[in-house]
Image 1 (cartoon, rainbow, N blue to C red):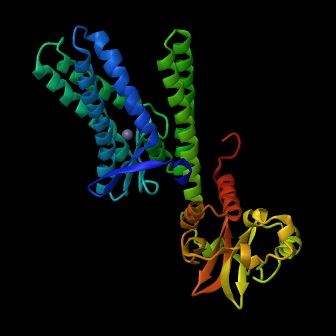
Image 2 (cartoon, helix red, strand yellow):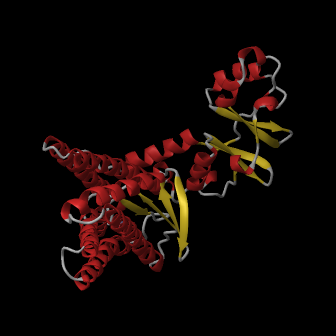
Image 3 (cartoon, rainbow, N blue to C red):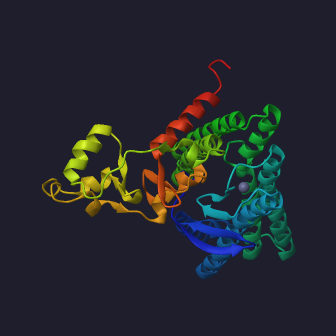
Length: 381
Ligand SMILES: [Zn+2]
């Protein structure tokens, strides 16, 4: 969902799947490179030249990141095979997120899509282990690299198998509960609860490590724990929103015949007679049945008080563009995305050039809230 999106760099496209890298990954890349080249390899395998540690460190880091990418691509390949679309993978922090564009079609699909990730990490671990064995003596630096890669991929699989949503293990848990209860929101709520709990567990473990003297490792665990808690909450929210709005069209929930402003009205009068009287955050600006734009509180606020008498609504409104309008038959979810992209609290609903309604973020939020309250289990259930 849009709530979890951050700034990322588009990297490459593999079989129709766009792979993007979150900026946080660049930092993580350097951290991993540094801790391998200046920490792990020199400590565990002493006696080599510094430059060699950095060469094997770089190769190990690149292959580690390639492993994470393969894990995510495995999710995407399985999803696309089953007809559940994943068209974008974002790699960040401790791994990646291959996000479905909507909830999976069935519990069985979810199980397969989630399960194939850790499975592929284990397979990659096996391959690296075989390479390490083929390379010979355990003390050699290149053997160490592939042993490390085998180990890290097992760790990646195990971490992702923790049964907290939205980790893969949490998705497996959700699939099992979904299958048993036949109730996706309830299954998601429970799996996300586990995700939150495991987040606390990681934070606690991190605190213990810090008391034990391992500051960096401890902070790392706390960081991951916090992230997991945030992801569990926001993915759950996203599911609630999708459940609530998935089948709803803009025309079902728009405000019909909204209050409109005339373009030549002075801003001061618009404030007195409309904003303060109706308490709305914005109004469509209409002249002779045609929508010219939208005037919201944010534009009004930017208009200095001494200019409000001679500036008109037309002077300061946002002129109508495709980013501010939506058709009545569009999905409510699309309307939300559009509002987020345009950073606007409302869209005008236009049909064949004519204003037919207004859809607002607060209006949609009310619908979602009502749905969530109806879907929540009754107390003591
Ligand atoms: Zn995964």
